[in-house]
Length: 221
Ligand SMILES: C[S@@+](CC[C@H](N)C(=O)[O-])C[C@H]1O[C@@H](n2cnc3c(N)ncnc32)[C@H](O)[C@@H]1O
Ligand SMILES: Nc1nc2[nH]cc(C(=O)O)c2c(=O)[nH]1
Ligand code: SF4
Ligand SMILES: [Mg+2]
Image (cartoon, helix red, strand yellow):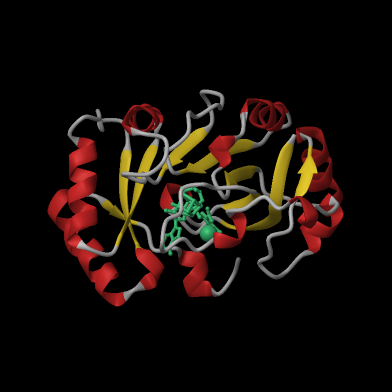
């Protein structure tokens, strides 16, 4: 069973799948506590805020409501809603609090590709074909060993930056990671001008890529 905060079809706005039509599943719950997090409404799991999946799918505002569902119920809902996207992004909250194997396997069997957006603070439980985006959160719950195994598994590393020290953190993490087959992105925090300028300069300096949360510039979810 998965606790789901939101389900919606949109355009992937971050990382290497930017521009791809995608179905997003936003899972409820995250203990990491990033001060600049743009999805704080997913942090807590409040029993009294449970609601049916049908109500979750039509909700338009960011709320702390969630629905408890199976993988099969989610797939059935995609079909019922007439979603055409064949790429599914599982985010949160922190999706790796959950075992994502049953969900991803069912989606793969039904012709979807899958992608996870994770902080690297929980062990990743997902099939080998799943594209893993790690947005590393340092000095947070989970510890160094878990984060390193997430970085090793990552297909792309997408580091949120606002200050030089965030770049230094990434450089430190990459020292212990084989990055040959990985894409490395900097993502400016909250579209701040200074963060964006820093990210551009550092992408040029280190030959990394820039991810700018295109959906926020477009004003879409
Ligand atoms: C909301 S998080 C959910 C998934 C997971 N907990 C994680 O942190 O990767 C999804 C992505 O948004 C990024 N993010 C969150 N708040 C942001 C902000 N204010 N500006 C830029 N990126 C942000 C995270 O770093 C992560 O890459
Ligand atoms: N369009 C769109 N793209 C996204 N890529 C990652 C997102 C996330 O919240 O994890 C996200 C999101 O919330 N919306
Ligand atoms: S780990 Fe992700 S969801 Fe959790 S607080 Fe940080 S950015 Fe937000
Ligand atoms: Mg988002």
